[in-house]
Amino acid sequence: MSKGTFSITTPIYYVNAAPHLGTAYTTVGADTLSRYKRMDGYDVAFVTGMDEHGQKVADTAEGKGMTPQAWCDSMEPAFRDTWDLLDISYTDFVRTTQDRQTRTVQKFWNDLYEAGWLYKGSYEGWYCVHEETYYAESDLEKNEDGVYVCPDCHRPVQTASGEENWFFKLSEMQEPLLKFYEEHPDFILPQTRRNEIVKFVEGGLKDLSISRSTFDWGVPLPFDEGHVAYVWADALLAYPTGLGFADPDRAGEFDSRWPFQYHFVGKDITRFHCVIWPAMLIAAGWPLPEHVFGHGFLLTKGEKMSKSKGNGVMPKDLVKVFGVDAYRYYFMSDVQFGHDGNISMERMVQVYNADLANTWGNLCSRVFNMTGKYFEGKVPAAPASAAENPLREVADGLYERYNACMDQVDFTGAAAAVQELAGLVNHYVEDSAPWNLAKDPAKADDLAAVIYNALEACRIIALFMAPFMPNTSNEVFRRLSLGDITAVTDIQAASAWGQLPVGNAVEKGDPLFPRLALDEIDLNLE
Image (cartoon, rainbow, N blue to C red; front, side, top):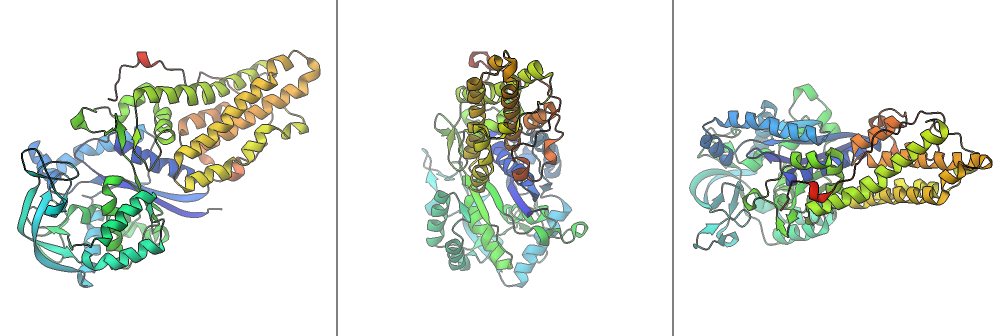
């Protein structure tokens, strides 16, 4: 039986550039948790999409001699193809130019307008087109020429003086937000993000402009002709759109799935998701999401990756070298989600060879090969005494350890728990020396016990590796004649010891992860 619904999002990504390593990091993280929750019995909704409105998009399109819609349409394959390449199992892909998004935005803000949460005024201050963000002068920095620049992207800002806007009464949300943070201490994760947001809100909030009237590339506000929704007042509402809000073809779905359990975002946009977004929802009277998880940046030589620094490596470049599953495994297992993480080609090769080629891949190869050599490629029948073994002791506790890590969005810890079992099986095989047992007919039962236990451990390891490396785990299941691993909807029950059917055909196959040599890789992350 289903454990209920589980809903998760990535940000709704800007369309001005194809997905890069950082974008993919967020998305693979959300996919890893989504896949695990499906295997753990949840009905999962996983929403992602494209943020297509705003001045930045309109300016980019004009610079390319295209209409904004044509530019956005041209970028959709870049996102969908990348997510397909990385085996992202999203359930909805929202484009903010879709009619269903327009209905959501117009209904939401019209409801707040009628409830008295909006007023008309003029904005005086500074605006960064690239970040689509308004700033007070005290927030800005100056470059070497004495020009005010954005504190986030360090590009020059422009004055936004006298433009008529609609404002959301965000200033009235200081106390409600602080009360909510206190009552829900795990709403903002990890703790360092929470501390930053609480301090920011304690400093006071200013009312938020939620419309623009100097351009028309956006969702028109229904209560005032000539005003379109400010980009964040639009993009954040793609989340309910992805669950069927204001969609007559999906009646009832929104009520059954809202609120989200998780928003996965980069730490640079936590203020939008942890201040503006919950304030909007409180004003609307909607239940708030359970968690916003702001992960860290990917760094090379201690600096955030960016194209302006020459970091032009894209996901497809690394996939060509390591394969999809090893790419996913590295970023989830070696870069602690929630913290900044240094990445390098040297480290990627090291993790690939140690964890995948030498441990998990080698284990499958040697055990499957010995099954063919000693038991004609069939799972042997082991004596009853084989059920008591050191592998089972670890395997029996794996679900609890793994699940606890996943509940904390600790992908590194979850992967390490599985690798511990894989390493133990390798030692078990070495210590048991089945090649010696095979020489003595009197040791036939002992040989069968060792091979069965090692095969059963491989089955269980494949189950828990599946959220990280779905293709490899499915291939291991295929080689064990077990069918499609994505059919598993109760991983706790499926991982109970002793379920590998005796007599199943076992195929050795090619190495799952051929070893790599760093000096043979013509690619540089730095």
